[in-house]
Amino acid sequence: MSTTSASGTPPTSPPTPTTPARATSAYAALTRAGHRAYTRDRTTLFFTFAFPLLFLVVFGLIFHGMTVEESGRPYINYIAPGVLSWGVANAAVFGVGFVIMQWRRDDILRLIRMTPTPLPTILGSRYVLALAIGTTQAAMFVLVAMLPFFGLEPAGSWPLALPVLFLGITAFLAVGVIVGSYARTPEAVAAVANCLMVPMAFLSGSFFPLDAMPGWMQDISLVLPLRYFNDGISAAVTGDGGGGDILVACGGITAFAVVFGAIALKTFRWSDQS
Image (cartoon, rainbow, N blue to C red):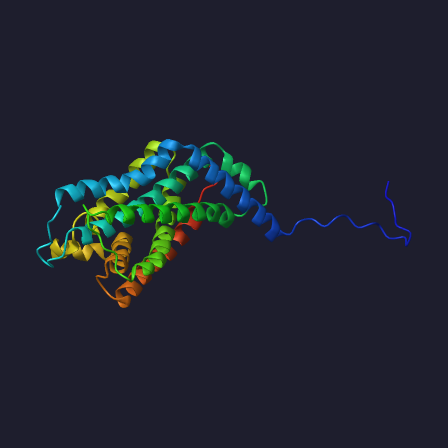
């Protein structure tokens, strides 16, 4: 039975939230849930930050006091920025790759899809978390590398590493989404991600200076996103290069981020059946 107002017109129902309001609410809820899940997993939390520091310590012990023959610069000036960028990229790929795979396997993505939550909102919540983790990783890494034993002395241009860092996280987060969209088990995520990230670390100069590599290996590195991530971080943190080098690195990372982002959105799967 319907009712009418005194003027004879049906009463208006309360306004429903707009789509932007719903998306904002979903984004906030997903971000909070992701943060709680991450901080409660103490093992993952520890190794996310300890893993790149472990490589820094190992290489620091091996090459302590040594310089690179081709340039005469301390080895720490090469190894620290490279290990830093690789560690941040690694965390971005593995972090979102495992989450996307687990959410799809446990039908969480299918349930989210039944709500008015668009895909960019889901990925945006993971992106903010990845930025926070990557920034914290970088700060801790640089502070340890500045200890007298390692001897890294950041140049005055170090703030320029921030845009490089954000762009690098963006590109490798997209790689992680692609990996997580296809891998169906945690073992598959680890296998695929390691097959991508470990060879890329060596070919891009994270663990070995590009100046000391054969020419053909240096040519291969030009088609790898980690090469530009390394170059940008190195130029900003150590001052080994000018603003032009940082811009070139940012341009290269941006191109990869756009390509990987488009592939990630195109290939994203809400369930193993779709």
